[in-house]
Length: 107
Length: 233
Image (cartoon, rainbow over all chains, first blue to last red; front, side, top):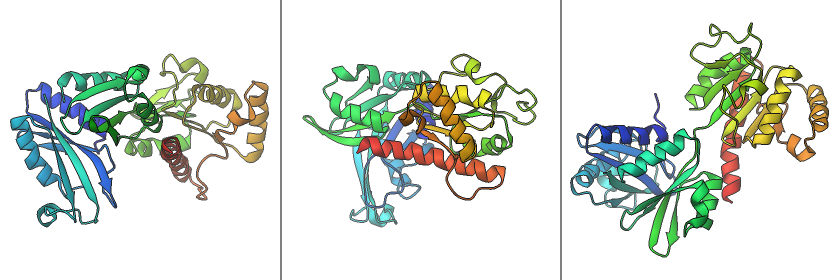
């Protein structure tokens, strides 16, 4: 089944209740051609399991790695991805867009 | 995000109330604002726009950037008529994440065999709505497909009163002219009646029940997205 943003928040809640470390990533800004609209969520647990998407697959890998750090230190951060960014070499948006993703820990 | 905020968000969703989560981008501080409590919030004016559009977005505040996560209730599709078109529509509605309810008092049509695993209600719409079926609201689309005014009209009237974002009714132009007459008699204004999409569905030349279902769902989605664009402008 495809997961809606509603399902993703429900998963964040359920995973947290199970005692897992959980981080929530949200697309907060997009420029140009962006694969997922503002407000799209990705939920990640401490083991790297995830549900949802913030880019349709282009940058999820990096978001998941950062999410692990957010789960550890609890400090929210903003990630930026796009062709204009140096991260484009390892995790770029092939569509040419740019996105900003807010990653926070679910306490 | 605090666990209590996440719990409150689910509670609002379950109660079918809109809510906005305000997140300060610089420090991650958050607060949840329910639509009813909006007036007391420092960002009241901005929040009102986002409640209307249903769209999340970044805003500038005195304390720096804030991200508004707008949560609107899940969209419901209420179909009047357990007919062939509704059968074709059921799996398509599920794929679109529309919560489908089919209402038809004719027990020959409204059978679980014809509608497996569908929220099917074999009652008159005006008896079902607000009781067995939760009352209509602006996050509902209503499609009247029975061709029978005794069944369709009360549902259309309820949909108009509830401000449903989409209202459609099956029938030819001639049938619709008669419907306009009846709804006018019932006290609805020309502007209100004009909210009803009739003939129903996007003009894609639909012939088969599945094609008509597709045309209707296309129109529902178009109205859902258009109404948020219009209100955001």
